Image (tube, rainbow, N blue to C red; front, side):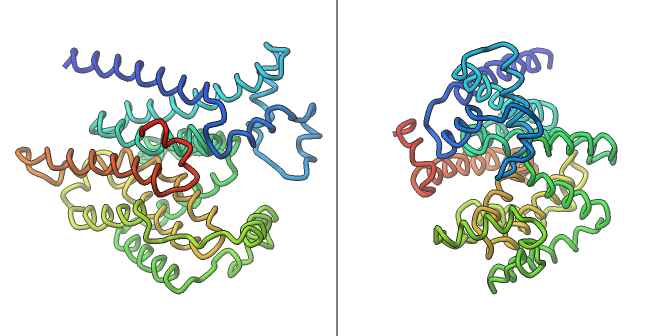
Length: 342
């Protein structure tokens, strides 16, 4: 047992160092790189100027570069250090969560590296840190330590305003206990996606939140494609829901299963509910919650008897390989990464 713990600890450190260096020292490899580069380069000098900017952005974009101004004079050094800090926070929060909560350590690592690392630590880096902080709050959420949970959520808001979705998930889980209502939620959301009901405009959220309206108009101007609700990851997420619903009673007492499963259903439901609005909302919200997947999906091995647990491993490894293929070959925005693999 001690040897196994030491092996995991060494593996954890090696994986963390590799991933942090990989993401933190990258140059022009992802779609959002130059957007962040310019934000770090031309950040306002005072908090007042930052608040008065035309296009609001989260406080992390102000705090992190200004922190490194205490140590560096060169703008290039400040920019590089800021990218490195985001990588450090994004990777370590998720790896600590895996080490702390994962029932199957290496399956969770495989799932994280094959998909979420590229999507968040290499692309949507603000959301990457926010989702990492959120998954660290799992124990507080599961044990109903709500004060601690909301401290985590406040930290999430420093990095991404869409963290409001975490509060929505908490509200649903706080007041809706019976799992059957979650199944009705996924059915309702799927029907709304089929009939293309736009909940952002139906609930006047574009009027209440100016940033929502900006996104919608931008997506209309760019004539963005509709969200493909039958994409590979969404379909697999639905399959996981069906499998775990069938084996719910068997898995219910597995540590953290119920919280992870409910969050997963909520995330897929939000994806469907927002699919008829701008694609950026539905896809990015799903990705934000995807952090629960690397803890939830490996629990599939517990539906098998001890002799056949290998099939659970095969399913997860195969899915991880499909994720890499999907990112490189199917999702256009990730094609810059193709040279890493082929």
